[in-house]
Image (cartoon, rainbow, N blue to C red; front, side, top):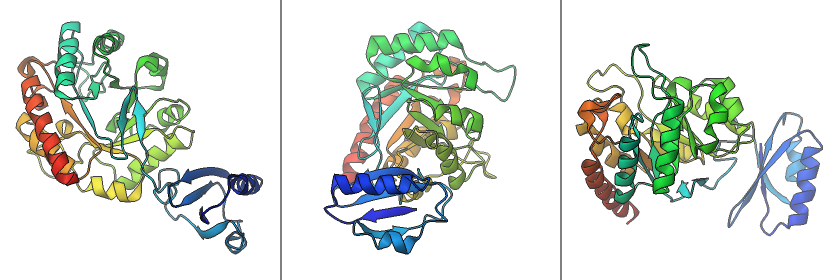
Length: 334
């Protein structure tokens, strides 16, 4: 349930009304905009007398939220959320270019790529230290060593880092990570999501290839219900009957999510593609559709990459793409 307050309501009145709702066992989340103040109520609101609430001199109107996700709902929080991580901002008009290799392979590799993508305009460095792989024989990442090398690249370039967590037990290792990534495979690992909800770290939550938009938002709700509202959603493609690509990149999810939620939405076209040649056009399409950022896999020598080289682009190609992205962003804003 949300209560839209009347204009010019005072802080004292808001405090008094919040205390009244909490006395009824409800959690209160306040969203203050330039023209409107919204009070979101979470808990068992079935016993709340909406007519009584609407009759209060501080309340303009009351609305029950039918969707099962509350904290992630735009009705609950009309203004766009801006998520900050290590100095970079995502959402609310802030666009983040995220780039780096699928896997950290060596110090020279990750540090070199970090310098290259930063000079091209990247705001966040991506790189995998731990991996969930379909085959037990595939490269599983450098694990702790890979995480240490990512931190070293961060220290040398100043770029905040994003990397994937694969289990709850790894959480203590991620103190040095600026943005914790949850893969599509773990999107409904609710034990992990609940633990991430207890942290103060920003979370990049990727949509699973067989999951709906509502299921993605419910997974975000699991994190936010624990108190961590710093969630960034990521579209990376859904499984269809098409086999030419790994997944079908659902660009319609970008405006759909922006309509449903206040959380930032970024797109990972590299994950959906099976060919490096598809990454640039899909990234540009995502920007045109209103994405708050894009994640691009960049490798200094894709043909020899230990993981997903076919869907990685070179630093030079990324530099060219970054310029195209900026041009599309200017055109969309105009």
